[in-house]
Image (cartoon, rainbow, N blue to C red):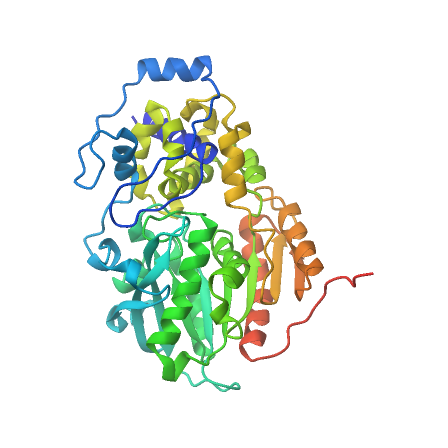
Length: 459
C-alpha cells in the first residue's frame, strides 16, 4: 500500500507543472474562470491506458462551485484543508474595498511565540492584511512580526529584517505563521531557521516573517510571494507608524524563500512603489529563475517529489492546468498529500516517475501550456529598485547556477548595485555556507551603509 501511495503521489503533480496556464485567483466567490484555450496535444498510449483503467474521482459538491463545472469542483477539492483557525481559513468580506497592505486584523501571540526563540521578545504579533493574487484579484495574507527586548544601537529607528523562510509546503499548518502562533515546536523543519531569527532579534532588529505562499499555499508562485511580502511590509508600516513607518527593511530568503525575496525586489516598482526608500536591499540564495530548466532537471530524478509538490501548488493559482491532469493525478491531488509539509516532498522523489505519467497530453514539458507557465513565472525582465546580494552553491545539481548568474548580469546591465557569490556545496550545504555572507550584507543595509557594487563596468 505504501508503494502505491508513493506512486500516486509522484503522479499527482506531474500534470500540474507542465499544464499551467494564465493565472487567475479566487476572489472569495469560489468561481474560477477557465478561459484559456485547451492545448491540442494528444495523449500518449500510456496516458490513454491510465485513464481507461483508473476511474475519475467523484468529487463532493461544494457550495461555492459553479453547478455542473467539473474543473471548478476539482479546483475546490485540491485547495489546502482548513486549519480550524479562522485567522488562516476565513476570507474577509469587502476585500476589494481595501488597499493592498491594509491591515484587516492583528493578534498578540507573544505567549505562544516566546518559547520558540532564544532571544527575549517584547511582542509577537500575527497580522492579516489585504494582498493581491497572481491574476490581480483581491486576496489576503498573513505575517508574523517579532519585536525584541534588545535595544537597537544603530542609526535611525529599529530596522526590520524581512525573513522569507523556505516554507516549501502545500498545507497551511506548515506555515511559519501557524507554527509560531500555535507554539508548535516541531513543524516543517521551521525551527532549523529560528536560530537565525533569534540572532537578528538579539541585534535589536525586528523580524517580519511573511507566509508568502498565500492563502492557497501556492508554493513557488513568484507573483503571489512578492505581493504577500511587499504587502506585509505595508501592513507593518501602517499598523505601527510610530515604531516602523520610518524603519529600514531588508528581505532575505533561500531556495523557496529566495523566490519570495527575489520577487519582492523585482515587483516593487510596479506593485509597491510607495515602499521606495523603505526597502534597502534583498539577499537571494539558491534561486530558481527558469522554471522550465529546473523542471527538466527535477523530472523523474531525485528531486521529482519537489517538482510534484510545486506543480500541484501552482494549479491553485493557475487552475486551467487542471484540465490536463489525468484521472490518477486527480486522485492524488485531492488526497491528504495536498497538505504535506516541506520535509515530506523530498523523499517522494525516490520514486522518480516522470511527470508524463500524470498528464493527459504527451511530452507535457515541451507543450504550449508549459511555455505559458514559464512566461508567467519569469521575472527576469524586471529591474530591482534595491541593491542585490546573490549567492549560489558551486555544486548545486538541483538548481543550475546559470539562471541566477544571468539574472545578476541583467540587473547589473540595468544599473542595479549587486554582488554575486559562489559558495561551496550543493543546494542544502550552500545554504549553511552562504548564510553568513548574506546576514552580514543584510546587517549593513539595515545600518544604512551604502551597498557595495561589484557589477562589471559598462564599456
